[in-house]
Image (cartoon, rainbow, N blue to C red; front, side, top):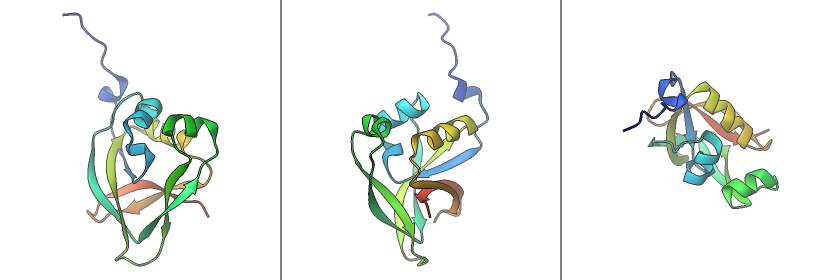
Length: 125
């Protein structure tokens, strides 16, 4: 059996947590954005409410397959919460996620219901 090269993400130090509630959970979006399928764990983003954003960026439309994308907005109510998935990413993969998201989203540090701190894309102000 021939030796296969190790994917770069396997050798990299994974230091970033990213919480996703939307299209970054889709396998096709992950393959196009990170060149691999991500393995994640369920969690909840407290104090936010889920809404919908219409995307017009042709590159994002081509990858995601939809113009309707979820987006979260803070409510200030800790009883509100948005379910999603926490992924472990390399810093380079986090940069790739930034490149995928359109300007309507801002990446912010959040505390999840599990107590973990992670990045999340929320409605830009």
